[in-house]
Length: 530
Image 1 (tube, rainbow, N blue to C red):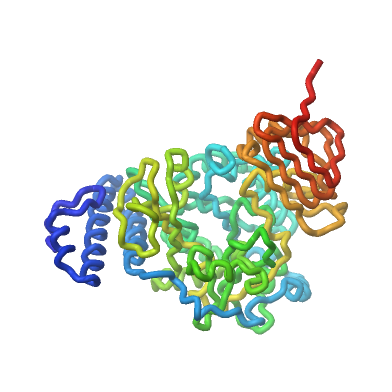
Image 2 (image 1 turned 90 degrees about the horizontal axis):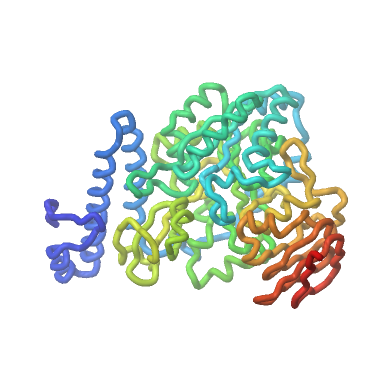
């Protein structure tokens, strides 16, 4: 290939390249494509580097190197990243029940153990899926408290209760960094040191290393990792900021710091039992004598149903992770953190740009997005295109660490708020709020959470709030489905299974004080002022 060829910004094929393709055999053809794409990528990244401010050149270089490595690996891979025949159930002792961890109790010096901990929250997401602008962490979820408010309250309560200094670290993205830093001023008098670092950068519309798997390189490159080690910190507890169940657990921390066999774990993943609602969640497996996280996007199509089986794969990853800081430093310096690239075919329209921008690298795909990673061209996207989204997941690094462990925790430690259906649950009387932590109400007779499905009229937070004059009593609710133009008056009580369906053109107003128990409401029910 002629290195002096004229590369177009969109990675279009040149005449010489077309000739080379027609003359090359299959393997040569693939190699020619790879070289062309890598060359086009290099040209684009060099342009970006040339626009960096002098004080940002080194940082930008590191970001772009990570981008280049991920892209190179992506082009080298052929077919699914896992061999299904090698997947085995994890050995029993590799996933410990939480009850066994808790039964050990706590030492008298729990404060000294806590002082070795850093809480890290993944704060890269926007609130677009719920119709909100800006960081998702700034959405109000309970008593006007945001996700970030509750997180700060939790850690402040720990520090006050045990006279400790547990800091909070936020991994932001280019989407959330500015707004988050502005809001942090409100916590300046709280008893929590708050640090931030950026997951990735965007220059001229190009996105660099995607997915929360970027935490290791970004944390290391920011200098914050070394600073925390120098302060005597030993473990980080990583979780999604929208998982309201992901609080610091003293029993798990004690197990890490004071292991019963004397050998510390470098990586602990909290898993919990699957329900029918969790069949797509990543699961821990044994693969080539190592614990390995397998995501549904990595599973060959022929085995997807098997992967979703609740009987075969009984647990899934909560993304609550406990990781040794010294191990991150060691592996990062050796460039030894290996995470599979997860390939997600997507379709982008103009309205989805924000959601895709959160996620990572984007590629134009001529036709249906392929699993064979050769038939696409790199291009900045504007809308209405099929795309391939590349991600790495923070939990996928588990296989790179020594003495890794899974802990099967109660479902209460997995309480994510991804939709307004989830929001309804955490705003209801099913939960009580204490020092930033939500716990299931003692008045709830069943430990399981109701299944709630709110229709498209409730998708946006502002629409959802407008449709509830007050949050219904849900203590005895098992299942709620709402579809269409439905509103709820004050002090409504929902029990058992309740299905409310307003057909197109109809409207249903549930009157104030109504008690619906095992009811189906359909048709048109409207209450008018007079």
